[in-house]
Image (cartoon, rainbow, N blue to C red):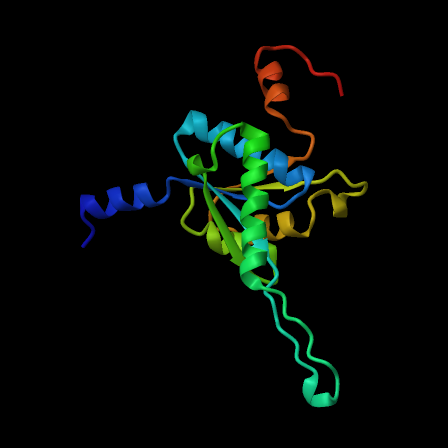
Length: 174
């Protein structure tokens, strides 16, 4: 039996806005859009960076020297620093205002969809390559196809200044 508390708890759980962040212009625009939307909607921004899992390789049994393994903690720390730096650059806010998650995974689209399964919205950036097939990008296309929440795809050319200018009724030159 569903109670009013179950519905209320579900409403609270869905109050996050997940945004995929890497070091691209598209993700910078997506982060800017997400932070702008969060200010007006009251949603909590969760910035997610997907890193490739570190697989140590040891060929010493085959007569080769042992390779030095990449420190996965250093990789995760570097990813956190990247996201923190982007947040500071995009919004000039402390990263304490944004929840930062670094998740290991081979497929960024799948990882973002899973991270956003309880979110109000998933936000990803896109690039402007020529041709319809390249417009969205593989990560954005995967998110649009598989997400269980709404997906906002933000072009790399989006900026808060452009949005506020259009809202005032002024046309922005292309």
